[in-house]
Amino acid sequence: MKLHTFVAISLIATFTNAAPPGRVVVQPSKLRQPYQGLGCGAMFYEGHITSLAARGKDDRQRQLYDDMFAKVNARYLHLMIRPTHEPQNDNDDPWTPAFDPANFKYCVHTLAIVKAARERRPDIELLATLGTPPAWMKTNNSEGGGGKEKATLKPKLELEFAEYLWAFLAHMARNGAPVKYLAMSNECDWPHDQPGCFFTPEAHAKLFEIVGDYLDKMAVKFPDVPRALLVGPNTLSAPAAVSGYIPAMMRKAGKHVAVLAAHDYDMRGDRWGDIQRLARGTKPVWMTEWCARGEDDTPGQIKSAIDYASAMQAGFSGGCTAWMAYDWVYPNRKAGESLIHVDWGNEYALKKPYWVFRQWGAALTSGMRVVETASSLETVKVTAFLSAERTLVVHVVNSATQETSVQLAIGGNAAPSAPATRHRTSTAEDSAALEPLQPAGSGFADTLPAQSLTTYQFTIR
Figure 1 (cartoon, rainbow, N blue to C red):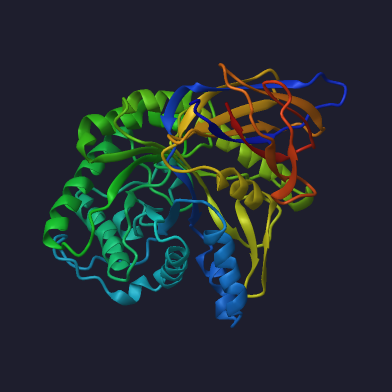
Figure 2 (figure 1 turned 180 degrees about the horizontal axis):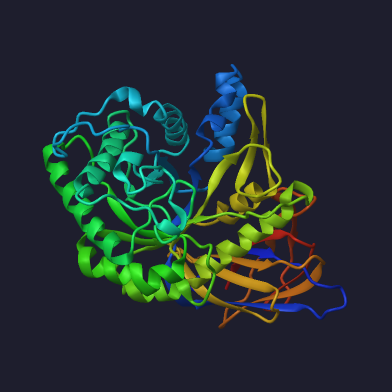
């Protein structure tokens, strides 16, 4: 009996009517890295996320949580550790925490969001990232990064730093929200003025080792607080992670490294392939933050939506095993930093980036493998995923502004054996169901609207 393969093809494409059909080829026999999942953050506007309930709009609050966690196939929820739960040193013994619960007030919103997420998706996993340690720990005595002065941790405060991280983990765990993954720094390679803390690759590696050893010992002393897995270096630049931070971290603290991760605001070179080579098949590779930052007046911010799709394509095709959008919610604004806009306490709107993110993940399952693909057009970028059950998902991204005809082909000896079901997000559609598409030879022929994401599902023989 011949095996049958279930195929989901996601196409984001825009071409000129005058151009010949673009050719997209998927090679399901050529497997690459595993897929772990998508994630998104509740990083800055946690109070906006919970604001509907604060105004007594409980039904609308539940609907927002449903849109975030019940209707989107995202495995990870990214949280921020703020620099406020130890305004001064609790004591001189980092092995005996004495934190004031009142200083964790900022976690009220975070805990409410996590509770809502876990009610709708019990398997969701939490990643927490420290934006900056408190001002008293830093060389500039400020939460800001210090700009060109490169503010960093004061000497001999490494264990106090580790204790600060542990205190957040303990507070979350003891309130029913255990954190599985921990990033001890955020964009430590970037000398800037916003809240942050700079570390050289060598200083970061040393601190990573100290934090890892501290967490090991505290897990024995306080077994009610799960030992979080360390994610790093979490740099702004993936190329910077490759050139300095990861090699130093692996040499000094390799036993503590659970995940190799970076943001993707420096999109140079074969960055994710380089990190995969440094991982040597022993560590997952995560893209832990990206957002569309430019002003966007297009309908529903469709331009930002296509930018998100392009960034996901670059990450997974490059070598990522997981990809995380920056933030679930921002206030109403012209830039595309978030998937949803919330007018505090009044209403919320699902923007086009939300619909692309939701549609991108809908057909994917953890454990799939990325497969090789190719496109004949520069504006068309392709990513494909294959499951052990022979489920195939392919995303094709194009940032042009006109429709085109496209020919989709499956490499090898495979051919479609059934019509393709389709869903689409575009300027006029939000993951809308379309009429099934009949096979045309060894693939499918279709015309795609400008700036759109189309998802095809079909079987092949």
